[in-house]
Length: 212
Image 1: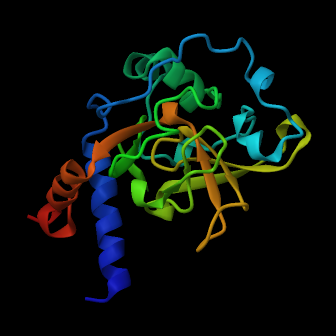
Image 2: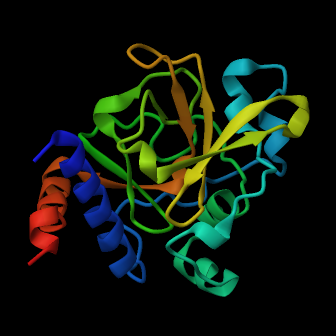
């Protein structure tokens, strides 16, 4: 089987597994609300600072009609912590250097807190100096949606989970090689799974397994 065909099957199987398990509770280590959060998102992110631009909230329209996982506002609030709901469902942001994964060096995979879709691999994580977890590429780009964000007098690329529409952060073109990209992501939009547990999860949800 050609490599691209296997990838398509694997992506389809992952999406199906996410849909089937969408009602489950979030994965381990989901970010909780940091103590002493500023009253305003803009208060701790100067608009003229290019590196901290991901710290400003978004004001984009995400087409939720095309998402696989859909819930009512009450269901989202029941699933997520207040901080997760504010960031993932209301396009907010979190304080730099005071969030769960900005300084994480564990080996594993980061999932969407809204639908348990695998989004980023720790092997693609790098130290951006911004105080938010940053990645030079997503685990699978098919799971990442992009919208042009012109809020706060600047032009940015908002990124969200295509499966459930949860806001993740922003994409910038000042990252390291080989892509030159920086996915600046909120920890509150992520949950973490260790490499060993992820390998087990991926094997269980591989195309061969899903066909049985």
